Length: 117
Ligand code: FES
Image 1 (cartoon, rainbow, N blue to C red):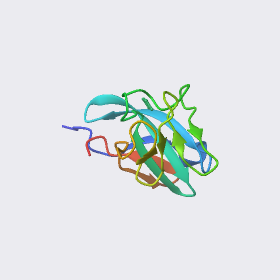
Image 2 (image 1 turned 30 degrees about the vertical axis):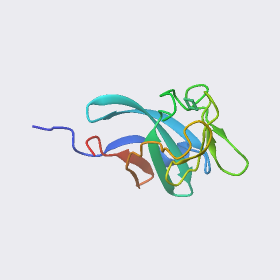
Image 3 (image 1 turned 90 degrees about the vertical axis):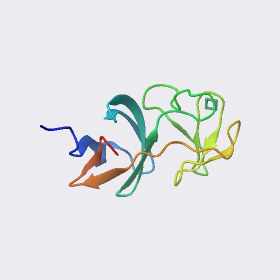
């Protein structure tokens, strides 16, 4: 029986602007989750689209994320700022906390996620 362990395609790499974001829905451990994807060249990092401050989405509209000139992601709800390597909050109401990382990989031009990490 297929229990869904094969990596699942989320989006084409080219659908994410370099240095920009995308939002996708994915089943992680059986739960439908909104994921925030951040692209840097051919690398993509992903986190749950849930702010550690008050649990709100980070985007102000689906897939629309705020990024400062110095490369921080800003939560649209109350302005917490996150660096985009480890997803750590570096300023704002949840300073020192971090986004929950979701392991993704890029293969043949697609971003894939393991649905049961
Ligand atoms: S929910 Fe993100 S800063 Fe408050």
